[in-house]
Image (cartoon, rainbow, N blue to C red; front, side):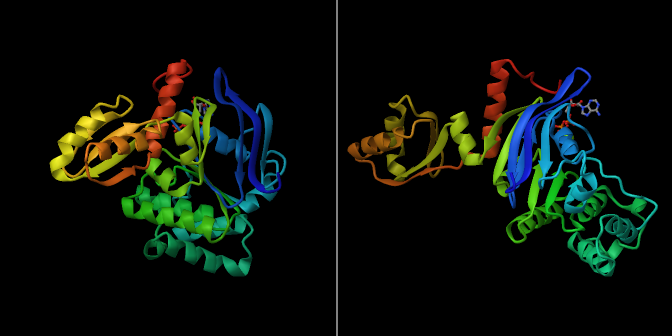
Length: 322
Ligand SMILES: Nc1ncnc2c1ncn2[C@@H]1O[C@H](COP(=O)(O)OP(=O)(O)OP(=O)(O)O)[C@@H](O)[C@H]1O
Ligand SMILES: [Mg+2]
């Protein structure tokens, strides 16, 4: 367990009749950016709150950096940062004061506080308005300040619950760079709850997908592609005048689906790898000159939707929020 930054085993948490987290087990490695995905009400925020000791589990074990969030809260909070879903800032105070109070609270050495606060304000683009009361900040500015606060004491593990919600695309990109930097260059662990699948695909080494409290899949995006058996889309480039002939060859192979002819290439989907060399042989036999035959990356969005459809088919999940 020592090499795991986060370890959850058989954790269940109910709210009345609602099973918010159901027998959840997972581990996150040190330095990993771990994506936690799921529809509204899937149990993401509840899991973060359990990991931060804000909530107690009904059963099961949780450890962050080997510490129990329920009994070792203060030690844990000195080494973890959290951006909650609805961060509370003191709106009567300036950004500098908000961060300074936190730095004191989280044990940043007195002689370093000023420097850390100023670096974080700079990093999150708030230096120019750092002397203003936070009550007058825009939504995105408040979100940046809350992010600055979660990174302030250079925590080993950072929980980010929807970090880019409310940010403009440039600011979101900066947050992505920050996440990449703290993971790659500084070896910190990031637990990232997000609905933004592009964000997850860009940043996360592994992702877990939750559906109504259940973990339905976990792994690298590549592993999940295999698990859901999503068809891979291929792009075929042939000489312009041979497109129709190539289309005829493809159409004779029932295993190839979703065939489309574009201006520059033909695309089709196949869930059987062996169909690719078979097709190539047939194209060559038909005298068609092939310039390229390339698999397109399956997006995390395709995987996510396929997983959701699978759960709905199992009858486990309703279409939307319970
Ligand atoms: N304090 C609470 N009291 C009652 N029910 C709660 C409480 N917190 C969470 N729940 C319920 O637990 C379930 C999981 O909620 P949670 O906030 O963990 O979902 P989420 O995955 O973070 O969703 P979202 O994407 O909307 O943020 C939901 O059905 C929710 O209504
Ligand atoms: Mg949530």
